[in-house]
Image (spheres, rainbow, N blue to C red):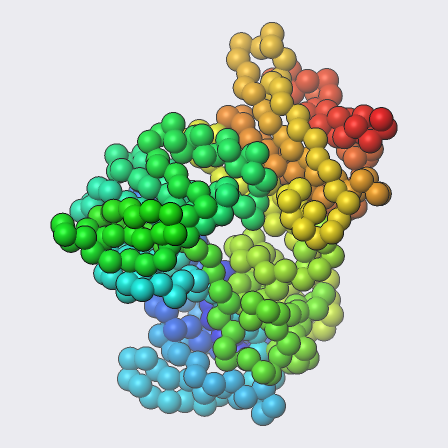
Length: 447
């Protein structure tokens, strides 16, 4: 079989490795327009904050690694056209500008995403940077040495993580968010306030409900950030306003959603049976709603990529979907989430409610302990668990994984209330805190 993989970050790398592990005789050709593969953009904030010494450590595979497995890897090649009817691709060698044509039996579309650049006047200013790729990460690190007052536009994961890293390296940091909270895709407004309080405690200026309308330069040649509320000034601006899928090559040839993300079935197959898609280029099956959604996360990309590598040989392994489970460390605290927030559940017309558990994670008689906050979201009609948000100095990220499994397996609050979990005073109380928050929910519903 002849397979072409278009794009090779997380999903593409996983697909190639899976194919050649199971079917080493497969003829695989990779076309990637960048000069690197497998860059973990989550490492940008770690590198900026000096938690990671070398940015190159954020690569977990190289083109040579894939070539050793047996793939033909063409770096700095731009795919110009895909003809799905004739199963051909047209590419340009970006170094020589030579045009080549290739053919495939199966195509795996792993073209990823790009930063969603708002159509704002002045955004092309050289002191306004984006944050995703290796080259952008290098620019962010280098400019941090020269500029002190940094403004971040966007309060998602990357924006908040960058705010922490800049604050920890003695920069004057401003975070501008168009919504009424930060991390709005992952936590509710009440939990978001914990994050905002942390940012402010560490000197970050947080402005909510402010939409950036333009950029300019002031009299001192600093960047002037114009919003619908006020003007702000900065030496440097980092734009972190989300991502959009790179799917123009297949527009009109396979089914896509309103974001332009490719819709896949349970085997990562598109509406064209010979084309598979994975990663930021496509949708996910979001289990809490049972609907396709666009969620550009590396965890989704790696799993979908590996599944595409399996399933081009037949419907071998079903895609289980996702709960969009994620976590971050912020100034020594862990914020973790999985599934639906209460706001998103209600927006999806689910009869949802939530309870909040706030107590110490282990007994007071221990030498030390920490406060823990858990918000558990559930369906009032059938008591299914829909999501959870956790916040503590204690490491609670793995508890988000536990709730993720509960959502995946369609467990109810009654199930979680008495689910078997360890007790040992070093770790928790006789009833684990996940049992206790579920018991709160059960008690609330029994009234």
